Image 1 (cartoon, one colour):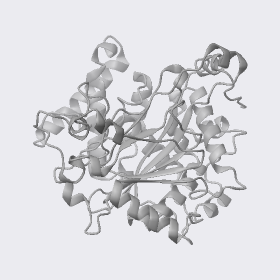
Image 2: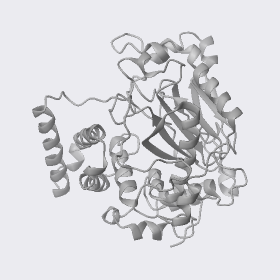
Image 3: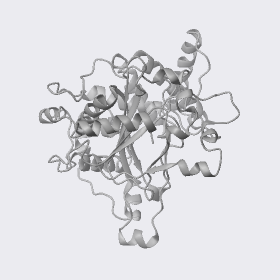
Image 4: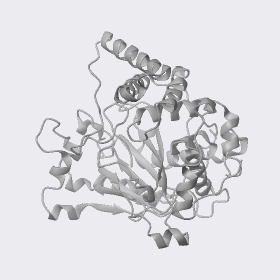
Length: 423
């Protein structure tokens, strides 16, 4: 199977709507290999495991600067060449971008790129870098984006990645956060096609002190109380291969880009969609890894990558956990849950419990859509079983743990511990 990639807006939209994913084949490794044919992607290729142990090109000076910036401002920006070499002979960044385009053309969420070795090679480089910068280890909170400005898409609305009950305790004595995120641009990310924006630590009263969830003012209002305070917002355009490292407490969001003009669409000069990958890293004392028994990534001499079953289990659970931000139809959602139920031995207990609750919430929110069909009835039965088990175990009503920084409460994420996620 071969694929072509974006040129003009009309061509891109036609291809994006021309194919539909086949959830019935979600567990077939061969299906995913066929889809990736010609994209420079593979699954469990021996030579790729060796590549995964490569260290980040960032030197000690880069690491020291990143540490200081993160502690002082809540984030830092790394130029291309600090995560993946500029003259990478394996074309890692380009192949991942091509793979995400291919997945979207086939009707799959961009995060299914984590089925492929190359995403884990990048994860290994990110893990090596983040270990040196923050001391945190991979949590497996992994997501990918394909944000198409010509389809009216944007990143997540303003949020914090985690909303702990005691925010102060989630920082170490040296000021480094116990949870950090590495976000890598696979295309140029700029105001035209969506980039990240942040409110730096110094201008955010709730960054370390925590937010008063019962208060009358939300965190955005407290951080931006005057017209002048909006000048503190920082846009972070990032070139292809560049990276952003930031903490769980910084308020950030992904913008909506500029739609192409008719002239740009006809000429094929439209800006490409923004593609990016992010992975969370945590101190296990604050948040345990989502998957158990996995190899340690980014350590020289330890070259193993997660196997296909683990990768599929993670992606399906993540898509359930983030159902509000990456919407799919009921058939695909049920396929994700089928994989999740068959993979319970791979998950941390808290993450598994959180994911089951998110599935029940997802079914509840689409109850009208599911009425009348056997698929919908089965989903409602599954959701009811989850809710009854939760009630029997002394649990409370399900709630949206996404940090509600806006009145519409947009967004959601897994609730272990209170969290939202990237842009």
